[in-house]
Image (cartoon, rainbow, N blue to C red; front, side, top):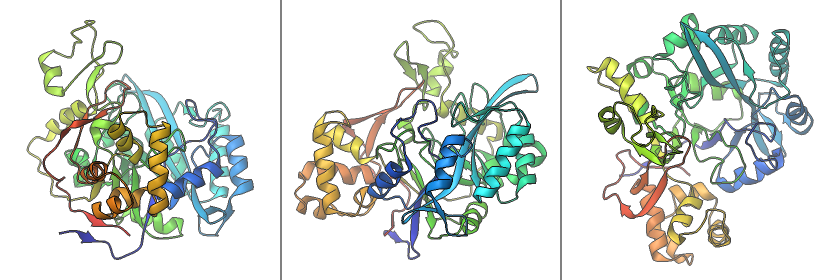
Length: 421
């Protein structure tokens, strides 16, 4: 039976980027973000890239404070956010970690800028700047600026910049944050993992670490923006938002199937080879095509770290929806590109009939979809997506996973479905 959320909720995507971050759309503006966030069904965005001088100047000029840490472009709220890349050495190993930073005010953001500048680090060359400082020291220093700053390890399993990543990460949060671990209240799943996978890790479960999800979007298009999000209890206060994160008191998350992520399986993109962690073990971690070491993906790394506490049994239960973006479903059905004229035509047709994309993905009944003039088979596929019944060929080594139309999983996902609005 469906479980209904009675308290009003808000869908938040707090990890995004601006046009000043590398490999991001040059059309990323605050105005475009708001336009497409509303179409997606998001109710709150992070500004992203608050450390970049030009982007921050636009934030100050265009967004109006409500006095409680929310900043508005017309009627749409943002909070001040950014992503930081820390590259340094610890215990004889090179470390590469991305952190999402949530900031309570413009004034606090400016204090963070002063701290970075005094350290001699540049902020002007990329919206996601690189600093040579440890996770522990960075956390301590930011918390000395303000206890209201929230620091969240980003996409924690990705090989190159996840805190548990195979190429430059750690085996535990304690190893990464040391004496500052009690200041870390949440982790971000990333596209290649979901809450179930993260709860295999005893440290995350035992410490009641909140598991949040955001898109890390590099554009404003709706198959990127909000593809992962966190469902918060509705608020217009930064302090209340942070309380929900710190006390694990939000409603749940929107996830994509982890196989959709770029780093779910092991493999070599250049060789066109990918495999599960069991196969990697059989191959001793060596690519059968080129003879070099495979890039170890998220599924493998989760299993590796979960084995460190093999007698551990998770007792926590978390709610999440696992859905692919609507553009992906339409592209799969029509066998065309997600940015094709056909997909946009049907997408706009659906949006004209219903509230927003999340409403279509999560709430609208099959009968309502068919009655709107959409083909029965497509309506059925949208519902199968909602129920977690679409198989995805796993992504690997920077290549996204691919949904497979001819292979439909015959059972619903285990999580209870909630009626969100």
